[in-house]
Image (cartoon, rainbow, N blue to C red; front, side):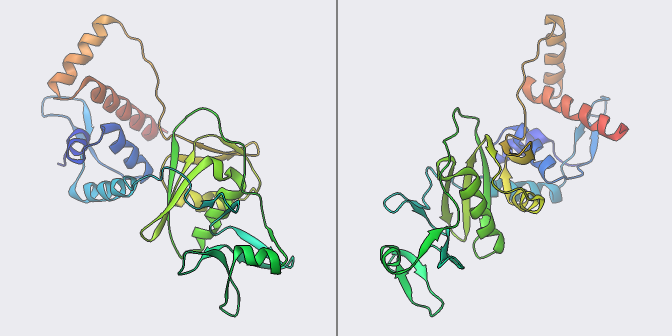
Length: 266
């Protein structure tokens, strides 16, 4: 019939809540079956096909998170791939050459280091890359974008201009940009539904929405405290033992089943 969420979580070495999060993120129509032949309770039945998709997504999420913004060069106060205007018209992106020098590649193929460009060219940044650092710690929203795609540059422009280098860590890992944005509200510098949809495609952990002139990065799940009668606790705990689940996983499964039941009614 398919393994349970808890079984897959044990194999993958993660919490069951992480597997449920991925199921929702990928919008997988995982079937539900009785938890055992003598029970009316239902559970998810993860087939090998769905297991493969879930584990592939989980592997993406386990990409090593950057500890700082490696794209920012504090000595020059610029960021890699940042967009500049030359002569008020031509747009150029800051890059590095084979010698790891920071600068611009001109149309004729000539690479000019940043310090030399300041002296000889009329250059100015297209946008600010600094924003006030978000206070508090509400986790991160992780983004992974393949290098070379148009989305790579659009997402970087968005992060620089809307969040600022103070509010996201980033690095180039293999053939992709890996960025972790502090979960917070950022006043919109640009308001574009296409940008929102683009970013949402490359989010591998967390979520993003736009509301009241703010970009809002946040968690995909909420943690709440639940109070119950002692006799109810013992009843649920025994049911969890019967299903060979931890009390926490049993409660999470019960809530997920209830949510699925409500969605089906709607």
